[in-house]
Length: 495
Image 1 (cartoon, rainbow, N blue to C red):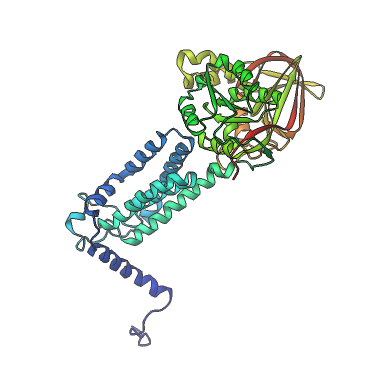
Image 2 (image 1 turned 180 degrees about the vertical axis):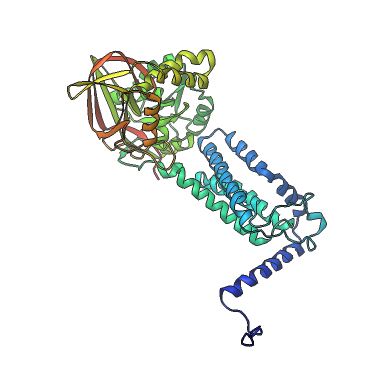
């Protein structure tokens, strides 16, 4: 040993801090072990065991999903996705990077200890990471549900120190990793709050404190009973009529003759019929989502009775664009999408089989039959030439992709049609998949995209299927689409 080395000199700087952290960690651990936590001896060990393998969080997600509200279901899914990412990170990187032994249990009273002590390395705490990831994921989608879950997540994290399974720093590191996983998931799949369109342009709509003057037509075929009951409780002055799908249009016409505000509860097809009648009678429209997908209501930012009731009571509304198409002597409107080609064929084929084998199997079978067909479902004239197409999609407003999520409209009054065309050719399945993966790219070998305010299609072959807002009809000859900017006034809660 060199005589120039003075072993009596204290270390300084970062090295000293790193050497002292384990000692400080152990002192905090001993302090926690020596404290009496009222009521915790019976609760925390059981809570800690219930979180093994994420069982507690899967049960919490199931309970949230059972509430049948879209926000709760999304929050549950986001919480589980965040938990999964945190667990994978812990097991592949965290535990293998820092091989820290578990705490010595001597300071921990016997009654607190787990019956089965974990045998994996201590740093970081997987239970704490899962708890924080689930709670943070839920809170990012639904702050109210996050407030319910957060105390449970905190208790699970605290139980890991209380039972002697982890040092405090293990818990803190695990919690930080879990929160980071929740934000990483949000970057890949944005929350609803990140994709709600701006509240513009605002419109003057009647404020109906108890709902008097609102005539709400509910489609019983969409399973709207729960929503209708909640609406009656929230707006007792509203008149609500429940009817079968075949009677929807007639009931809407009756309501429009007497209403100050026309309301509709159902899926996108039902909302389309109400929008057409509201436009003709120059009435504001109140939309309560009651179908399976509810594209228009969700893109608008109305998710349930609470959102709609607040907007109706406060008199909050906006104006949105409407798409109109004409062919021959007929015309129609659409709020979401218009398409020719593969998609209408798929819808018609799915309807043919769904009553026999069920909706999901029918959708798979329809997709296989359509893409294996030996003919192009659509031919249209463009620049003097007849061209084969697999799909023509027109969105009422520009669709944007954020992260891994499907396209969403960020502005329902941008004055544009979002036109996507999948070119004809061999191997339709590959072309359609390539177009889907390309998303908002404007050029690819398989598809083209453009934003326009008007579109004219000539040379559409007889028997071609057209789908608009989920409805399917036959067209041929010339089809013209035009934008009706800010034509429809709708209720929506303003921020």
